[in-house]
Structure formats: structure tokens, C-alpha cells
Image 1 (cartoon, rainbow, N blue to C red):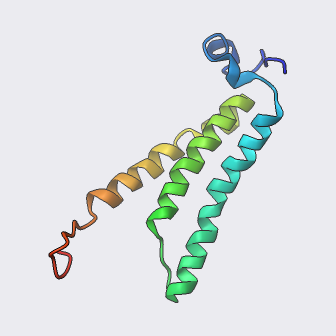
Image 2 (cartoon, one colour):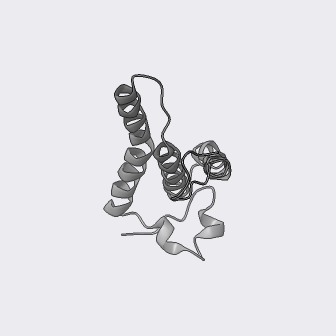
Length: 117
């Protein structure tokens, strides 16, 4: 394993987090896992919609969107290419905001309630 010293952010981040710029097979595995997490959200959304026989966007869709985008962003920083970094940097904020709104407006149901408000 050898550190990557060239790139967009490596000269600035490399001295502080050198493991981010190590070339290894584990980064490839992480990149595949990130893409599987991010893409898997559509499979779950499709299956949920098929089961309900209508378009459904379950909460897990937004969780997978958030965590997949965070993982993809980390992988893009590892690759250290400006177009990839800028293309991924705002997605975690977007999906995080959707998660916030999802749980902010979700009705709170107590065990004794007959129906949600």
C-alpha cells in the first residue's frame, strides 16, 4: 500500500488523515459497498411499491440514500477527483434534510391511541 500524494485534496488532508489516501483493495470493497447501499434503495422502493400496488417511498429509502451518499462521498474524496467530490458533496445534506423532515412530521402514536393524529 502506498499513499496517494497527488490530487485535489490530498496535499491538504493527507497529512492529517493519511489512511484516506492509501491505495488498497479495501477501498475498492468500500466503493462497491457504497454503490450497493446507494443503489439498493431503488430495489427496496420498487419492492415496496409492488407489494402495495402503488408508488411507495418507505423510510428505509431515505436512510439508504443518506448513508449511501455519505459513503460515496468518502470514496470520492479517497479517489481525490474534483468533479466527483463536487458531484457528491451536497447529497448527504439533501438526504439528511429529508430524514429530518420525515421524522419531524411523523405522527407520534402512544400505545393507548386508537388512531394517529
